[in-house]
Each structure stands twice: as structure tokens, then as C-alpha cells.
Image (cartoon, rainbow, N blue to C red; front, top):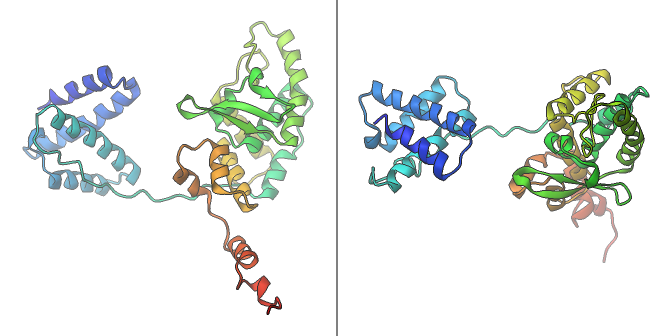
Length: 305
């Protein structure tokens, strides 16, 4: 029974080209399940849906959050589907099994006043100050992911058109919009960037964001820049680049942008992913209803035939 898991992991590596990190995660989940079966005297090829459900319940009782249980269930689904495909079991016990629903979290976002405080803070006149301002303006203006921001290159930048080409998840490219404050900040950074390039020994020539030694900024560096600048601005909450992405989407929707457009701007493959940002206030919904519906409050006083 124990040999089935290594065989499955080998198949994932050779046939499905799964990464080493994915294989370690799958292996950890599956070996833990095999150990649990051993304590109950059960064989992997004889597992029932009831036993799988019991295992998931025990995981929840141990304090695992829903997302962790769902991940372990995904590992088990893959294993049992493979066992059925290879003829080692007749029926897949995990096929129709449902895991716990993860609690839907409303993303943390900044108010427009907090955005003003963040972007309106004083930056020193050094290259680092200009770069940090440009990074913050770019993140809020484009709504891009931290990895997309860190990966921006000079040849993908079009200041005249006000766009930058970013490489998103799944190596998919899209155009991100740059507002006037972001364009101004980037334009201020570029000549200072050239100054750094002249003084540096080793330079990544195409990278938009570089450190004082000329090296490309990592995603972690961009992340920490946002955290540090938020603290410097006196924000009462820990801000991350993803928080700026949430703010970008929320503020667009609050001002009437349609969901499909925001989906394109965020680079979401599925509309359902974008729907988490539709946490507009009751007041906003009331205002839209009153303005658009024939029986809304703003129309109740209209004279009509």
C-alpha cells in the first residue's frame, strides 16, 4: 500500500511535470493519510467515501482551517482518480466528496483619504525616494500584482500612451493603465535611474526598478517598500501591495466601473474571482438604485403623466 503513493508522485513528476514544491506538498498530505489508515487497519485500495469524510472531519477537529482541509482533499482526489485510471480500484471514493467551505474574506482596502495620505507623504529627493514614489503610484494606478510590478521592464513602458505591458499569471500579457500621477512619478524616476546606472558596476539594463547597486528589485523588496512607506505615512493598518490592488478594484467599482472592465484590468481569468471586490457600501447601492430605478427616491418626486 505504501508503494502506491511514491508511484503516484513519480507519475505526477514524469507525466504531469509537477514542480518539486507541489510534489512535496502532495507527498506530505498523502503520507499523512496513509499513516491515518494504518492506525485504523485499512488499506488504501479499500477506502470508502465514509472513511474519507471521517478523515476530513478529524482534520477539522484538530484545528485545520477550511483551506488546508480543501488542499488535502485535492491531493486525495488526485490519488484516487489515478488509482481508478490505472485499474487498482474499481470506484473512486473521492470523486463526489465535498470539503468544507472556506469562509469568504472581504479584502482589506484603503479609503481614498488613506490613499492620499500614502501617496501624498514626503519623499526625499534621492533616487530611492523617487523610485519608491513611482512604485507606489504604479501599484495603485495599475492594480497589478507585486510580481508583475517587480517584473516591469523599460521596453514594456509607453509613457506617451500611458500604458505598461505586464506579465501576469500563466505568463499571460496584458496592458495596464497608468494615470497621470503614476506617469509623472515614473518620468521623475527615469533620469535618476540613469544616474544609478552610470555609477553602478553591475546593472540589469532592462529592469524598470533597480536598487542603488543597479540590481533588479525583487518582489520581496517591492513588498517591503509598500509596508515601510505605509508606516511612514501613519496608516493604522499593515498595508501590502495586494492591499493596493484591492483598493484599485474597489475604488473603480465604487465609481461605476463595470465588473468585466475591472476583471480585464486586474488580469483575472474568471469573473467570479473579481466578484469578491463587489463589497460596495449599502449607501452606494442605495444611491445607484435611487438614481436608476423608476421608483427610486430621487424619482419619487418627479412629475409624470
